[in-house]
Image 1: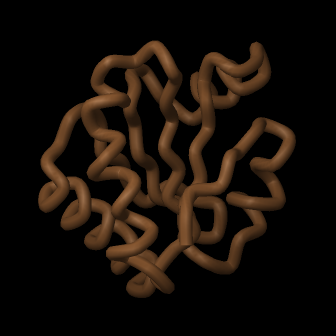
Image 2: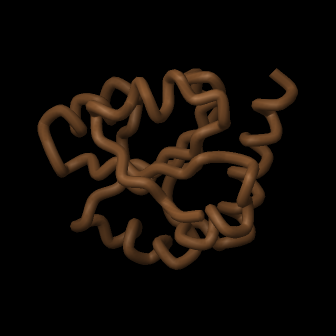
Length: 115
């Protein structure tokens, strides 16, 4: 399993209507922190396989992607948000170790099952 590329036009289908929890990474190619955390982030779909869907939204790809990120409350990159049935459960912002990132995301995904 790997990250899917998300665009503003995919949001409703991939996130809002998803029956599976969705981890969305808001990032951009010029973000030095995004580059530093990328190796850890790339492991999430494998280590948390079967627990969620993983999608990346490049906030600088288009004006619409930027607007979407702002609408979702993203003020910095990288920001990882977990959505359950289209509703945000929580977020992890900035540079984290693999263990911290994985643990935080896993906890948010587990909250989806609780409701």
